[in-house]
Image 1 (tube, rainbow, N blue to C red):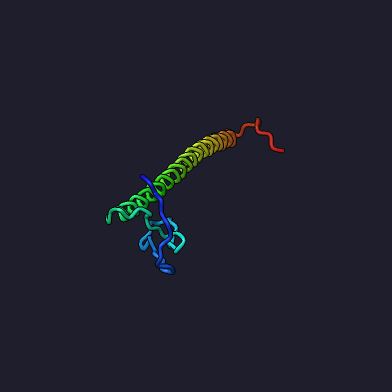
Image 2 (image 1 turned 90 degrees about the vertical axis):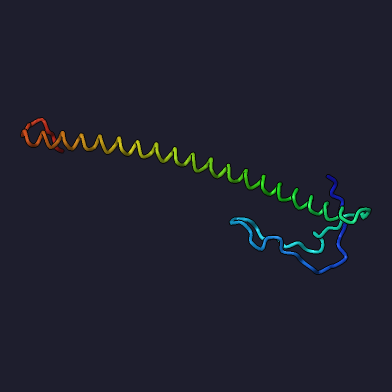
Length: 119
């Protein structure tokens, strides 16, 4: 696919391509310097096909970028989930150990054993 374009003659007309942009997408207005017309005018439908091809190419590039960003975010969420699960296991172990120590001290108090030494 060849994408050779030159500036449009209708200057000053901007086209807003994303009237209903997906969440997180950036709004982009096409200005006169960004507008394109194919240089080859041999076939009357060919300019439109080339513009269509350019739009499809740009959308595919944007899609690839967004897919990579999505994968990166999903990896971060997965990593945070694993870290959170590990942290919860540590706190559960600490809580269990603390509860066991409390039960041991209660039993010692009930038995009135002199083995307890308080500062």
